[in-house]
Amino acid sequence: MMLRLTRNLLPASGSSGLRFTSFRAAITHYEFREKLGLPSRLNRTRELQEYKDYSFNDGRVTPVTPGQLKKIKIQRDLAASAVRQLKEIKFIQNRHSMKVQGRLDEKQHIINSKLKPKGDALANKSKKSSKE
Image (cartoon, rainbow, N blue to C red; front, side, top):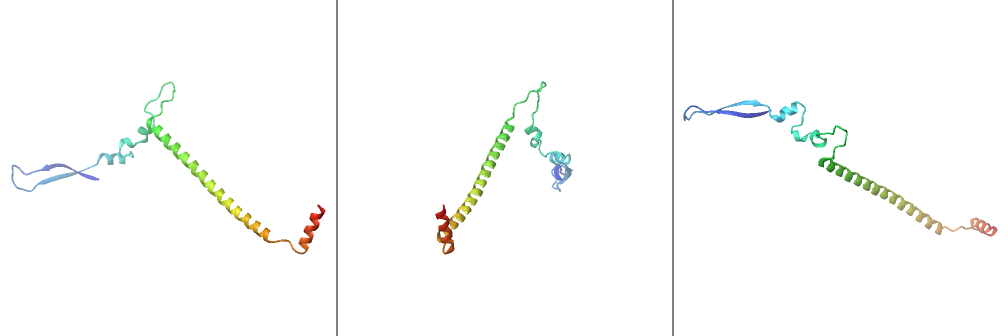
């Protein structure tokens, strides 16, 4: 609660006595609105900012307000950036898995090129290739 100065009481006709001041507790306008559950400032209500202040009797749609246009633009920009970032995340995930798979394939190719069949495996392989 805020105290507000209401009046100054001075002693009569130029005496150099003490200066008396009286205070009374006053509820400010903002505190009054908060007690009622209203926003502290009237222009911060959603009703005045977002909704139409008129409508047509025949049911026609009222034009979009500049505030609504701004909000729509912001929401579209947010949605576009979210979609773009999701695509980037999917690309990074796919790229990582492709790199890992490429490394594994390369290792397997190196192992396969180093290990040559010997002994019975070589004989069996040559028999199979001669039958074909």
